[in-house]
Length: 508
Image (cartoon, rainbow, N blue to C red):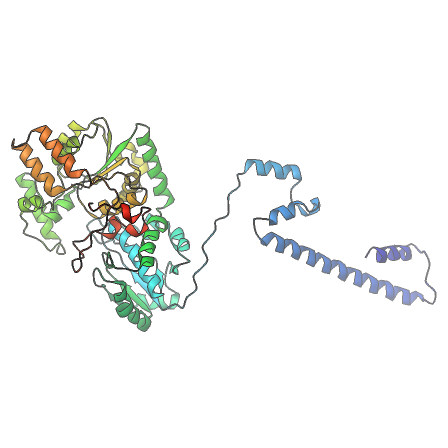
């Protein structure tokens, strides 16, 4: 290329005409040489920039180092400027996504979750496992908006939907919505919808649900709570349920950050206990438990129970139900229990619950015994919680995060949050969780209050009863043919816990 340029310059300066060349022939040769030169330059430029683009796209690991050693004319910044930028900006490692799982798609599965946050959380884990086993595409689950709480939150308002989809891509394909053609069919009401049978084995979904998906292309499961059996499932199914629960279901950035802030505020004052005091109006109306309520409150709870047709149990004997251990502890019973367990009176107690029925009157004895009672509403300003108002599931998500981080977790009723938090704390290293034996407790409390037991006798009995009920390693209770009575999978996901089976205890 350089020789051609020299010859060209000589000819332009009149340095002579080669022998046998006419003036016109020389001009033609000059034009031809210029055209060839232009083509060579253009081709070289294209090849050079193609190489640059290809090297840049090779990867973040060594590509940038290659570009850094090229001549300055190919760099947008000088070495000094580059060094300055690299000093100021921390290096952020590239996020490594799991490879997509390749499989023949058998169809699409839509699900509508029902219940509160933790009931829906467990259901989502089940539905992911079912979709994976059936080789179908799962549509991001729809959350319950018609339950007692009437929370309008969508999946994306509570969970990090993009993380949910990408973190599970090596197991199952998840889409935010159906493809347009199938979405139109659903909008026209042409979709097969059904509730699956409760506590079903995974084979039920293969034998009964998969053929429906293959036939209709889209199947909508309209109830998802407790639809997959606790026990007897393949190990890979059980481990996938854990992976979804403990890794894929991450709360939104806003919820996570506010939760961290609450935890920091609590930690500034030392250790703290989270008390899941399940003594809200809806819980009492549903269960029919009225211990400590006055006549007016008993009537109000009864009216509420009859107002909800899906709360099928209407006539309830509160005293008998309490003696069977089927009622949440009252605030007064809770105060006695914590004192009997020697919980330090100066300890911070975070109330993870909604509005306590009976208000300050019912909380008086607990506040007298433990004056450092706090709630998210007392730790945070109104401005911090304004976006969470009337969104019970988002408020429950905050309580969930604080419950996981607490030094001690004490649920007064074994509802869905109590169970799911219990299992998550086991997964985090068997963090102390006091699992109250309500049937024995109310009997001991009655004996103490009527004078049959002294305080020392009462306290000793409570401690002895709960010595092995602190959230340690245990075998999950299995009761064949009675799945509702056996231990809930999400309260003790043994298959995922880092503990040798030989060390498991026989008690809870």
